[in-house]
Length: 234
Image 1 (cartoon, rainbow, N blue to C red):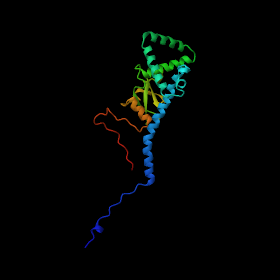
Image 2 (image 1 turned 135 degrees about the horizontal axis):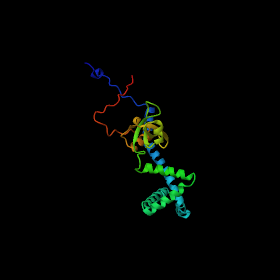
Image 3 (image 1 turned 90 degrees about the horizontal axis):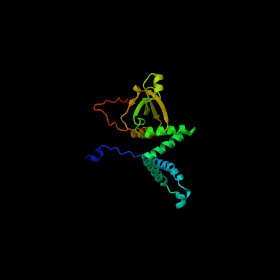
């Protein structure tokens, strides 16, 4: 009589996870939860400290430290939002606009301060309004050398001197660094070498802030579009 138990094939037992690998996976899982939280808290605190500078506009007796005896976070943010709203309300008025224009003309005539104020004014008008295409078009250019592509933003197309001396239709592209997109490089690129992208400015900044980990989906992908073949390791 044969022993059926002994004739049955041996089933491989599942390998136990190594404790070091399990510990590493738990650490990564915790980091994935806490890193976005800590970055968000840091950004909010950084902006809060900047906006809290608006409290200096109040008399010392009206500040939270004098009224409540301690620092109250968030009061500066509320005061800044209220100040921005009231300023915009005044500027939209014809009389208020004339006052602002008169003060700006006076400031622009002050040595050193005038050029700085004028540059900041022109930059804010270009970026925050619809007067131009600055930071409204995401493009791709070959930078820092041919064959390597970087994401950038068109900042200016009115480059008369550059276009005259290069005899080409040139655009100005800002190529930001990552993960800090507030710094970067200004490159002057012939228009025919600029590759427009369908991703929005917000999607491009999200890609830059995440070191290219978060890549936006190609929403306008044409039917039957062929991608470059991926090389497989041999």
